[in-house]
Image 1 (tube, protein in one colour):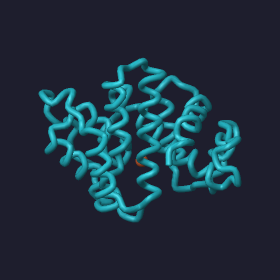
Image 2 (cartoon, protein in one colour):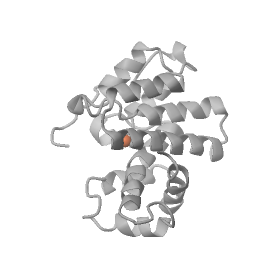
Image 3 (cartoon, helix red, strand yellow):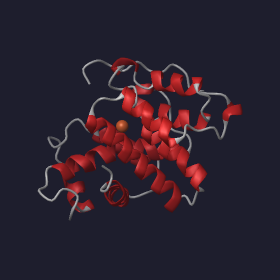
Image 4 (cartoon, rainbow, N blue to C red):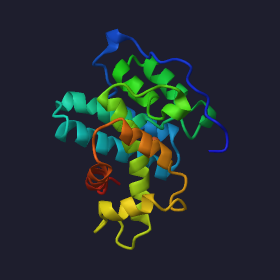
Length: 202
Ligand SMILES: [Fe+2]
């Protein structure tokens, strides 16, 4: 990114009275399609949403209702990036506050890049979006260079590419390492999970 992102400047978002309020999936997709023109960025957001939701259901054993919050955060976390690169995150946060969305979803979006936004991941949902955001992009880049794309792609080869700084250089290894250090899950396991749950998202 050419211009620096402005830190958000606060760490409390939304109104606790809105806990449980979500944007229905159709409305979230409308917002995504309206705000984001870049097909690849749209796909990235849908992939992070799918991985987040699957993790919430399969690994955290959350209900469909709770898992949808993880999905929603993934779906919208980069919604304002294209239109407002220097105010990335602040604009979508304000929009979701206006729409009275659950503060947990807003905080999750706000903490997906602590180095940029100045908001630390607190909950498991926050920590997982931070880890999955960069990993999802990296796994996708790893798939795109293969003739068979996701078919046959394994975590080991992705791990190897992570050690090649010139490959997908825009993906911050520093952020990946920082995110991993905050959760007690091996990187290879996370990468396998990402591959399995985003390969069929189009
Ligand atoms: Fe992202």
